[in-house]
Amino acid sequence: MKCPFLVEFHFLKNYLLISAQDSNRKLQSTDISDEQIKQGGIIMRAHFHNHRQFATVQWSGVIIAILLGLICLASAAPASASDVKDEEIKHVICSGAGCLRLLTYLQAERMVVAVDDIESRRHRFDARPYSLANPQFKELPIFGQFRGHDNPELIMALEPQPQIIFKTYGSSMGYDPKELQEKTGIPVTVLHYGNLGRLRPQLFASLRTMGKALGKEERAEAVISFIENTIEDLAQRTNQVKPEDQPSVFVGGVAFKGPHGFQATEPGYPPFTFINAKNPAYDTTLSGKELSHSNVSVEMILEWNPDYLFLDLSTLQLGNKAGGLFELRTSPAYQTLSAVQAGKVYGLLPYNWYTKNYGSILANAYFIGKLLYPEHFADIDPKAKADEIYTFLVGKPVFSIMNDMFGKLAYEKIAVK
Image (cartoon, rainbow, N blue to C red; front, top):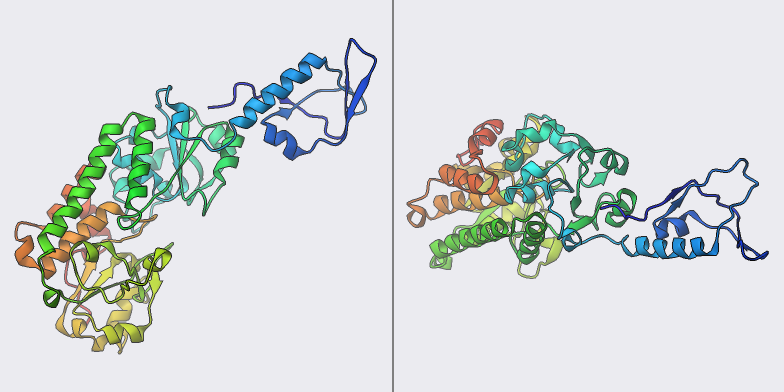
């Protein structure tokens, strides 16, 4: 929402001479910087016959201008959803990795008036269920580049204008949220994308914040309950498995800001945690970013020699002569692994694709659980379960669409010998 007192002048920058009509006194201010004016929320635009002339302003006008500037300054900080709580939100944009995914979970995709440029791309591979379920995103106007690199001019030219901008990863990448709000006059609400591990409360808080702003509070609570109940179901199925009966597992080829080879893993890989699988890459001393994307040495993988190997299919983006699958098939070292020798290598849907794919994470957990503990998942068809999850979260069963893109290798044994 634009500041109602945003007055546009073509400002005279070097010297401003103010004369009171009821006094012969003249007040001359020294240099007024762009930053001072920007902080006040006012761009001054005055038209003069030549640049040597000065503006004459009544003192009352000065006081009013100062007061209005202070009001605009007070509104310049990044907004919370409560700043627009009295206005029915019909038009929004989502900036940053995963932001549009969360909006789609809330069934608010029809409110989107523009997208960042990742939505307009057409590639051989795509592992974003929210986007596959909403092909109309590709036809919307573009407001900036992906990963939050917004273009304020494009945003201000949108019709209809967004009433609020949601933004993820606002402190770590892309356009500064405060500056974006100042330049566009549109409230910017920063969301923590969270994860399904220790940052789950932050994810849920963001869903609630977005839900409150959009009048989708009930849907936000339904999504939160769905995620919690799904994780609880996985735990109840496997929490009685004895440690000695837990196979060791490793997932390689996990993407992070692009595809990687087999050494790329996620030490805190949630599907393994949810089903009580033994993940040697996980260390209880790790925390924060150490639990996210890591590259481990080939020697360490050989030392662990896991019972099962899983390949994150995002690695296929590297082509037929590179990536995790190529490495497993051609590396003499990997060929010595017990899982390779026993044919226990399986494909998983990508964990990261424009940040974490929450639906795919849950779906992968059911597949891995069915594989490792079939008696505990006797009622589960992993592919059907994946579509059940996607249908709830994004409105459509998109497993087959994704699986076709990845050579039908998801939830299947992969030949690597």
